[in-house]
Structure formats: C-alpha cells, structure tokens
Image 1 (cartoon, rainbow, N blue to C red):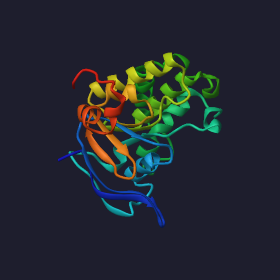
Image 2 (image 1 turned 180 degrees about the vertical axis):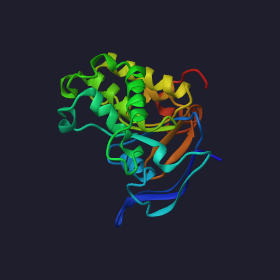
Image 3 (image 1 turned 135 degrees about the vertical axis):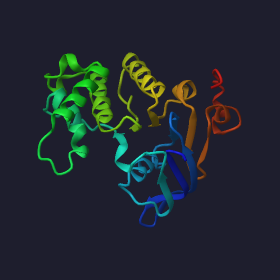
Image 4 (image 1 turned 180 degrees about the horizontal axis):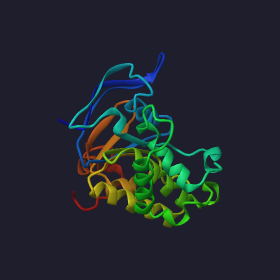
Length: 234
C-alpha cells in the first residue's frame, strides 16, 4: 500500500472551495514538488495532509507502516521565527516534542537523536549559538534537523529555499536530495520550476483542476510542457 493515499479531496475553508477532485498516491522514496500560483491552496493542502485542516470532502489514508505522527513538517518561516532567541541545540531538540507522550522532560534517547541530526545536517559546530544569529541557509539546516528528529519517513517542506541566496538554495536542495536518496519521502511546495525538473519524481500541480503525474509527463504532456526545460529522464 502507498505511504499516503488521497481520494477525491476537496480542499477549502467553510464555504470557500480552493479545488476539488484531487486524488493521488505517494510511495516510499517519492520526491513530489507541489506547484501552483500564489493563493492556490498549496499550504492548505500541507496542513490538510497533517490533519490540521479537515478536507471538505474525500479521504486521506496512510499505509506501509506510516503513522500520522511520523510525518515531519517544515513550514515557511516568519520574521518572528527567524529572530527566535534559542540555541541551535534547543531548536533541534524541540523536534522530539511529539515523541514525548506524557514525559515532562527530554530523555537521553531524545538528546542522542537530536545530536545525530545536528551532525547529519552539519549544524553541530554551532549548536550553542543563538538561532537568530545564524544565516538564512544555516537556519534552514537547523529546521531540517529539527524536522528529521520527528521522522525519517516523510517530510513536508513548505518553500524551504524562500529568501535564500543562490548558493544556500543549491546547498539545501542537495541536502534534501541526499535525504531522498536515503529513502526519506519528500513533499515540497515550490515555485522553482527548474528545480522541480531536476529533482522531482512527481509533480502535483494545484489549480482549479489539479493534476498529479511523473516529472517526465508533467514536462512533456502536462502543464509544465510550456516551460521547455526537459532534463534527464528519471
């Protein structure tokens, strides 16, 4: 069974329908780019997949051993969040909060996992540095480490390269690609069409009539054909 299966979803708020009849399946190891215009409802889809918003219609099922609390989420950062006065170590460790249950304190295991995540994402060298003093790229690496602390199965990333310079952007893309190569399933909201063509296995295009297809299909017969930036077949 697929890790995540969405059937005939209608996404919206109250009486406002953003889009409907959305069906797709995501399997282990997929790298899905969610593309669409501003205000199309991409972030609303993310929150719906996380159970934070109920779909107006349709169903969302997890399978293949994936539990609902094993989906990591990296939302867009606000200005206030970028100025958060906590250490890198504290930020990363907070990713274990959802695993604590009724425990009032982090366990040795929580701290071990957080430490390994910091090493994995190369942020251990400034673990005691204040988060707000880090560069944009460093902050996003810290947030990726935090997200990885909560799951190693599926990560939902909402425009993770927004506001980063070109070097930091490519560095982050490479890091996420390495995670995907290790078996982590990625769902990423992005406006970066060339990156989608380079990294995605599948494209979910959100609009009035949403579509879900492989990268090759999207850039040949789908809505991405207009961009004419075909790369190697996957």
